Amino acid sequence: MPDPIVGLHHVTAIASDPQRNLDFYTELLGLRLVKRTINFDDPGTYHFYFGDDAGSPGTLLTFFPWPHATRGSAGVGETSATSFSVPESSLDYWEKRLLDASIPVEKAPERFGKRVLAFADTDGTKIELIGNAAGAAAKPPRHSEVPAEHAIHGFSGVTLCEAGFELTANVLEKMGYKQSGSEGNRFRFTSTAPTGALANYVDVLVQTQLTYGRIGAGSVHHIAFRAPDDAAQLAWREELKAMHLNITPVLDRTYFHSIYFREPGGVLFEIATDPPGFTYDEPLELLGEALKLPPWLEGRRNVIENLVEPITLHYQKAL
Ligand code: ZN
Image 1: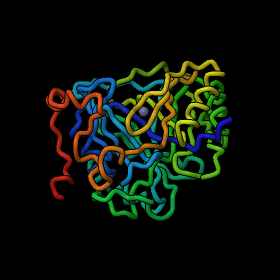
Image 2 (image 1 turned 90 degrees about the vertical axis):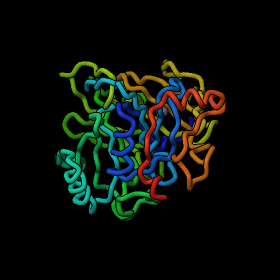
Image 3 (image 1 turned 90 degrees about the horizontal axis):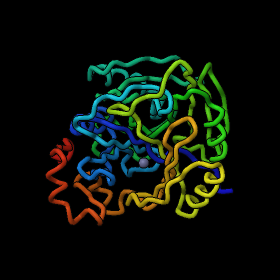
Image 4 (image 1 turned 120 degrees about the vertical axis):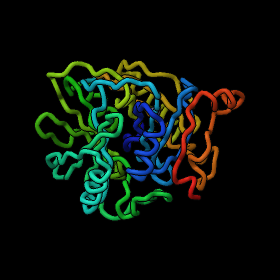
């Protein structure tokens, strides 16, 4: 049996306007654009990766911005909220920052003893800030307007909206998660890996009255869990195959290697390797500043650069 999964690697969602998406996450939330590339399965679309300064696994929220995408509709079988961890003492700072930017903020009831600020990005993607961590982020983004002591640390976890939880629980438990609590119709699964790392829980929110969601702008496309290396990923592929899940072969995503499968509740899961990481094709100091293409698309760079909309990374101009 491979070691338990330690937590999330990344979350990938769908946006509409690329510039608006870029501004929301780099300027307002103060994350770093750690990779500017394209959707390898749809090279006319950007793929933005936002994270901490180094693009560490467990901090990465990524987007496919489709300029003409219509809004998705929320429902079961999808990730309904992505939560980031911030210092408890920074929640008042964040509430004011969001309200000053005219972003409505909902102070959700405490969840498992933690304060929650809930809001949506400009496409309706549901984001939460959880007052969790103490101290500053390990690698706060270098160009951020957000002072390091208030910086987002990375993910806290995700909420999956489902019609039931037992079948999903079987898969999560296989992956090394254990049910650690419940509040009403929310069931929490926490990784049994010893690190106590960021991004180590998944909540399943059971909503029997909802129908299946329709994917579109504002929807989460998939969530990815961490594998420390290729060998662990292959071991997980065998374990999950034995549960009669349909799993893709290993796909080369340049910055990590990936396998995908749909868990029984309907959410697309990925297992992504930590290596090689985002400094694979550009130095740490320059992450995100140029459009990077995988080697097999480099020959079509001119075509691709004309297909994607021009964007401005505002902090880059000030360098
Ligand atoms: Zn992914």
